Amino acid sequence: MTLKSYLDLWLETYIDPKKAKNTGRAYRFALAHLSPKITGTEITEIQPIRMQKEINDLEAVFPRQAQILYTVLRAAMKRAVKLDYIDGNPMDKVDVPGHKPKKAEYLHQEEAFAYVREAQKQPAGALLVLMLCLGLRRNEARGLCCGDLDQEGVLHIRRQRTREGTADLKSEASRRDLPVPEPLRRFFIGAPDAWVMDVSEKSLRTQHRRTLSAIGCERNVTLHGLRHSCATLALANGVQLAQISKLLGHAHYSLTVDLYAHADLVMLRRCTNVVYGSISAHHTGEGARLEIV
Image (tube, rainbow, N blue to C red; front, side, top):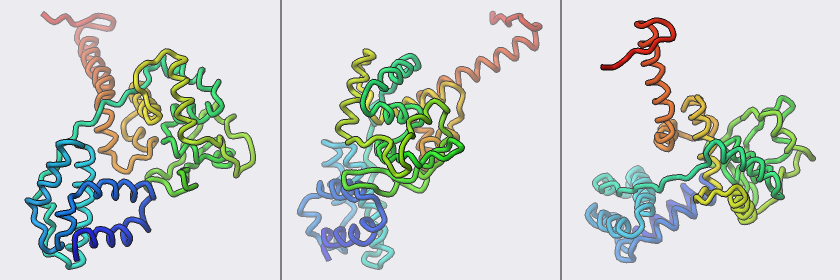
């Protein structure tokens, strides 16, 4: 069995039935970067050094795709070991490709205030506001129905909306219940099975850009950047990372920590000021300041 034949079978058996369609597409796109020479090789003849060269060649041009390809191949070959197709996973001896993610732009406090005001002038402004205030992914927001908000004001996120229609959420952690502030509940008026807003991704993106232009924000804050804005503002205002992880529906807490280390400096600064202030007040009396000489 060639590597290509095995990978096709692996995708059809273990990925397509269990993962979201977008995940399957992403896996196939990454695997398409493999050279015909390696995909035509018998799976039992695959050597780590040849896999390393494939990863290195892709990393030199598309670092992020190299990282995805490494992850996909490692998972696929791990299954091949379990199925007794090969004795060991060649990817265990391949170096993890480096990838420096781009800095995610987000809205600052004053910009967020202006954004909420201006977004409501757009046809699908309700979704933009909900994405910013609740940290929703764009397809989670597009998949909201009016009946997803219960009588207690809790929003039950249970689906996402894709080009093909409704689909399962990204992960089990994405299934979450979020209390919605009173002013935002007015967006959920209509029949229980009616969309909060029936809008395409393209149209939503266009309306988002119009809103950014209206508030004078020239930075590249993407639709996903509204989610980053929500998390960053929450962290800056004292919300703990564990709660932010639940808010965003992250499958792993470590992902939240890695993504928002920049904003965590705000909390650390507050922490060091509190410690210094307590020492100063204790030793010099209330209202006095400890001088460093």
